[in-house]
Length: 228
Image 1 (spheres, rainbow, N blue to C red):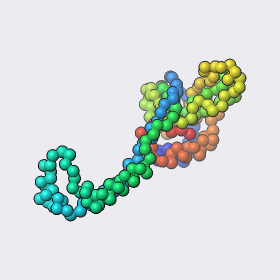
Image 2: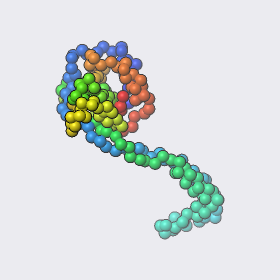
Image 3: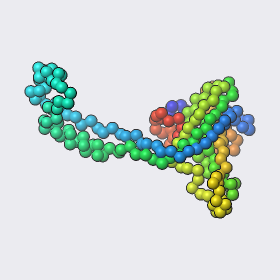
Image 4: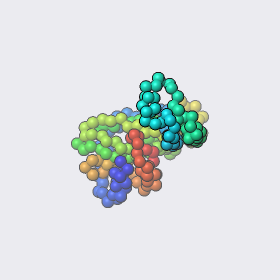
């Protein structure tokens, strides 16, 4: 995934772009919700030592211990190395970051691909437009390994710690609106499996070049999208 995206960056200005006014992809639906993401726990380093040659570890005694009832204490735990390993493991666990929930936002869209070309990469944004001041627009941009087959629909989900907006106009607050924003999804760039590209005319890749590099600088896991 990372190699493909870096290759995309290298060819960004060398590939001819399709020039229709709008993308052929259809945004069927979109929404956002507050959620909580749990950071993954990092495993502590294994500090188990090599087993000492105590009588219980000799071949005959070890074979006899195979038939010990469940719960029988391992004699290796009572050796000097065993006690040292137990202490070291406790220290490692105390220093290992524990999973903790993080307040986040999930941005979900369903995309229909009516073309005969599979979509590989998708650049899109979720916009929040202040109803009292249309010039006040908050944009949450995402890069996704979309993999939308020709003629198919797919739900795409992106996570961000950033919500709808940090700034709301005074007029909007004065109206005490329960929904102060108009919401909109915009497709910025589509990269197809055959190598062709469509890009929105008034969207400038240069504006997100650095955030793009950050997004592809580490290996991708199970996530479909990353924020820009």
